[in-house]
Length: 239
Length: 239
DNA sequence: CAGAAGTCACATATCAGACAAGTTAACCAA
DNA sequence: TTGGTTAACTTGTCTGATATGTGACTTCTG
Image 1 (cartoon, rainbow over the protein chains, first blue to last red):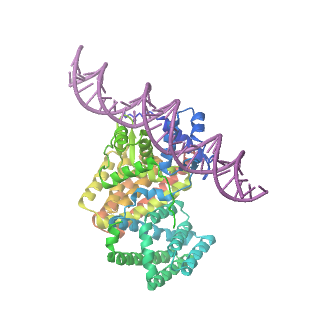
Image 2: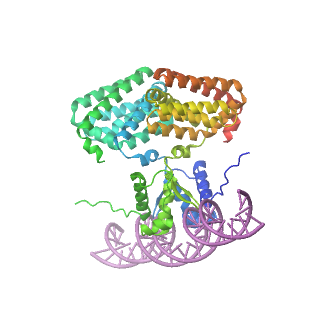
Image 3: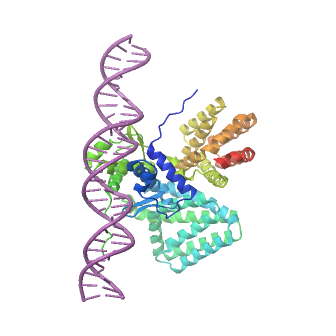
């Protein structure tokens, strides 16, 4: 006979649960303001510190945002949080992240080729067009939007979130890469064609083709990143 | 002349940063006990609530664990946190999670077949042996250990963490599944052979073979889960 | 009347003191 | 050795006071 660990649940934990429950049930939605600490501790009949503890924990979990003088607000999903404390861009970590991205993106694109709706295609097209228009400044943003549109088309929200997390934790590297791109027209050209090929494969619902196209694209990007970064690797070291 | 936005950074945020920095720099490693709140607020020259706020936030982020009467401890990565607020096992979410797991596991096993060390093989072997020994009670635990050993062998720590996250957020479903298994000897038999096949492929460094074997295994598991759950689907609804 | 400035209510942020409750280790006695 | 008590140290909770940020309202002024 085994015994479960007896853990006298702390008051703040109970408060936390209650609040999470209310959010999950929809009583408070994204952007809503929660009752003030005073109100909460009165209606729950606990001290202020217990309520504060619960709210602070939820802030750490990323479910709420506490603004002094205003109140506490429910934040929607903040995917950045997933890899938040992992933003230590040593070379090995970046390689690992990129590998995960490769795995996810190549799988996602296969799903997208099968599940994509018309709206998804429109979103991808839009991102691509914007990218070729404003080549030099914020092409990175639209590049990201293109990939996210694909992830969205996969029909699996968790995959979408994961990719968003990874992208945001690779922010710095991505920004570096797009600066690299901006300086070399031939890279823009190549990448544009790779994107178009991926798009085409998704349009004609060719999962295997889309997979290959994405694989090609990511390999190319990885190669160029390595090339670009080995030149100024001292820059990476310090960041 | 531009002015930077003056954001009076809260004391608790500064404290939080300091602690995170110490953890990142390695002054405190996984499992270590942080100084007590009293000590911290003395050496940082701030009030207890500021320190408490910081620690509570870190607890929410999953970086530390606060145990009453003992102290505050650094928890290495606590993967459960990633998908923490996603433990709403409606059918669609489970399907999405399982799909992500499929993608990750099949990729991981390919990497493992190439990168596995001798220690990795020993760990897998051990998990498999334990599983066939104590068939009925905690086979689930060793099943999980087997998969985690593979993930570890992939050489990509982020992949390992992600899989751990997903497993722990599927805890309930997994537990249900293993209860299902325990009641049907033929399932045990099938799964045992699937595991052995995966193991074999990894041993002889056959990435493609390992991929196929894992695919086969997961498809089988998915099929059995669907079968088992459709019977008692009312159970899932309520949880 | 319109806009700037002041005022006030209310929110969180922080501090500090007191006590409750859990953990550990050391000590002591049967 | 075993079991119980105690002491020291930890976090948990409550509370009251004060500081500070925010927004709405009022008042002053041209």
